[in-house]
Image 1 (tube, rainbow over the protein chains, first blue to last red):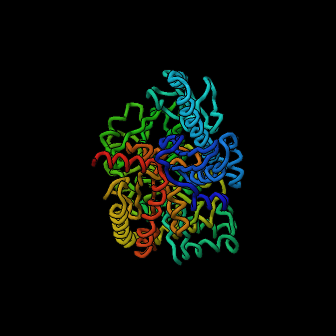
Image 2: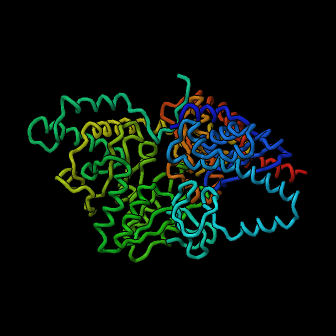
Image 3: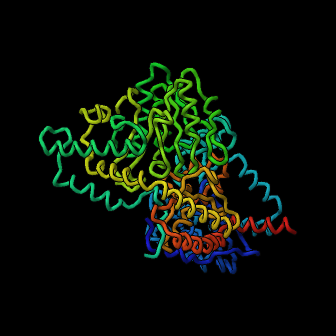
Length: 190
Length: 396
């Protein structure tokens, strides 16, 4: 099912662990739906000096995390932000179609850690009011039930992980197609 | 050979005696059982023999055996065929929440034709309580289906009670015995059930041959229309070699079942005790005693089942998992969720089903190999890190 490269990274993952005094932390996914990844970064002179990750998930999820960490280490933040899910999957020699969502999580977790670092940095430099803006922005948004990606209203497919979606008529939140009840409010789904 | 194959319910080797019983029907006795000439009649004789062999395994009449291609087909035929043939009496069906997907999807199909169904919940051991079945019955109920034993958690259901309840209420009762047949004794005449599914590949027979037992004079609508094969209840030329193998496997397993049951129960209990004793934060899924003799299933917390499966495979140990990542549908098993398990815990599903020839040293190999694989995955699991932090906080 998996390429040798995937198996090699699964068996000998690079950069596993945590960084207690990390400059940025990014967490994506949730264990209920599948995989969960946490990336920790240390930044020095605009470069990713150190990266560590922890992953709860399948072989592909672990291999992807490992590959992302290896690819990003030593890169500038700009370069690291350009690592896409497609490039990671390609570096691993491809992933089975139903595992594409795993590759999508890896780069996102890294990007989220970088964004976390940038937010913290701008907060240090700017007035504390920047914080209220970002949390208000987050509220009221809809998320993919599978990969947590922020979604616009009225889509039938998660643009990141390709999971088919159905909206709850009661609370408006997204659920996976085929589910019987809404995971947010418990209302029946049609 | 060093290694351990513990995924019997996915596939198991065909027994040598079974293969020998099958081989003549590929070339020498290649006939079609429907042909009247002597080559055809040799094939027909093989079918008749297999029918008797299977009938004696489950204690029914040979004419009550319908040969089909798989356990899933048997379940489809039972659910759809019985519902369609008996719909004049009502259009409501009752099944347990942990039935095989072939039963659940058959219900979805029937919904398109105006049928309704009720899923009976199970307790945390996966047991169906007969009083819950009774509560679900309505004046419109025509069929109840509860599996004899579950393939993912091994729990054996109180089939005798549920069957007698159905008889009292005048409702047809089907049981999916695919996971149970050949492992525990089955007596359909004593149980008084209307229909039962079983599959050859679960007890040393080949893939591609299975059975729906259907009690005499029970009406059923065929799903495959065609010739007069299986008394018009299942069209299509019979898979004679596979059916001959099914018959032989049934004959052998009937003879050996009791010895296997005792031996495997002992190995299984040692396996369960060993796993629960060597790892923290692992739970047994299914019933501790009322479970299939060859079946042990767990949820290992803070790790994901597919990663566990791959980690064990590298060491030559082959097991199964019901985790969302293992399934191509990316959904956690409905069986594990029906037990009331947290979906994150269900992700750590690990299922072992032992072959009759499993040896003690294979169990030992597994018990030695599992903890390091789990430890390695937990070391990289953010959930395990959180668990350790919380534990530290609690203990000051």
